[in-house]
Image (tube, rainbow, N blue to C red):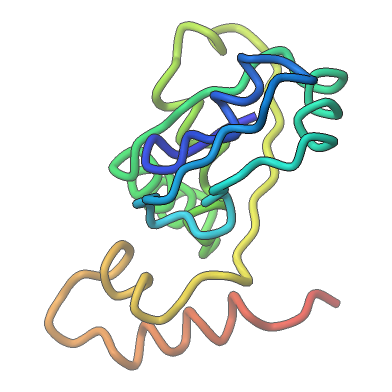
Length: 141
């Protein structure tokens, strides 16, 4: 699993283990809204223990790098939370060297402002950001 360093509640809860009193973070700061967990659900933490080997923490700069990498090399517009898996691979290269790795990429939660801020930060980006947003938000066939 992957958490943002600005919202580490799930990683902290996972490390504490199932059955431990829930952690709570009143102040979370991350661009990755989709993984901005304040209070982990106990059953979700227990389920994670059965499914994942670790929960890695990445910072927002790594998430932006991952969004740009996916856009530049795969032509995909992904939301910050959807780039978290790639951010983990970039942040912990030794863990993944020589391994076959899969990660989910999602994009429906990306906003036009995020596209402007993170993917096309130049003076004349409104039309390009709108096109990218509309494409990312379109339903899959």
